[in-house]
Image 1 (cartoon, rainbow, N blue to C red):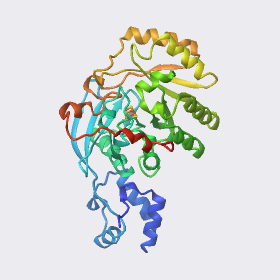
Image 2: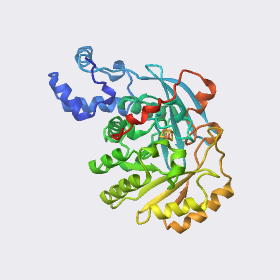
Image 3: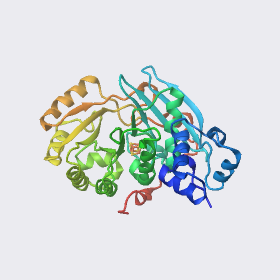
Image 4: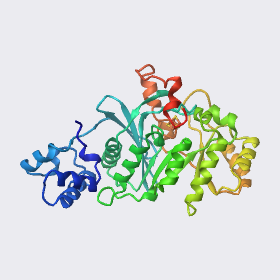
Length: 366
Ligand code: SF4
């Protein structure tokens, strides 16, 4: 039987485990252990300051120990830091820490690799290796923040992987990160980002999840979106927009945030703006324009002038438009660039591309 890992059990569930073990004051002990792990960074039994008898009783019910080992770190000129973590089974993931004046944002991976194969993304070229366990996700956050000597103010699930493809794992990780007895990150500062998995967006909306959800649109023209994101073949634009309308209806006080990677010659012309106006009419949304970061040979990054022209034309949509430049993009840490470094280091390094049938694994529609 696999024991639950102490690093990924929420305090209430932990209290239940301790009560079942016959331990005294299980609630207080659970909170103490949770704080030790998630606030003080305990990684192994000996870090918990427990008497040997108590430790042995806990070890019969719970596993504990580090699940990641540090495999590398780079610091960009703008202060962005990228951490490479090796998992116990040999897989590797990246975490990026972005700094600006007021915030310290951790960009977390939710999977090793990714099944979705977006054309502009280096991670997609790895194929899906596996989902991350909540404890692995949270440990990557905790250890990256500690290594950088910061307390994270924000978390975004925009690293390797499609977060809603690992829905339960990511939601559980978000709960661990938000718990006031741990890192205590506000739910409004925890953002999941999806390439547009319609059933999972609807589930997210119907469950009333408190986290923010960003949706990568990248084009409102079906053919263009399919070219950029093969998942668009599974969930076409009308289905996606219908899901967004339901999400908006269930969260009337929140704006829908749409991500739009701007690629010259692909999705920045007038017809693309027309399509956005046509498809998204009546929806209250913010459009985050992310100038494409070089991550492969197929596209080029836009110039500053091209981005400016595009955002000027977007004004007629009447929605707030924000341009998001990726921290550390010169050093391969920006949006869509994660794993570019690994691919460059090991172009045939054992990473297989997702098999053609992988999309049957993505949502309820096969
Ligand atoms: S952009 Fe996101 S969903 Fe698309 S391949 Fe990259 S990691 Fe996966």
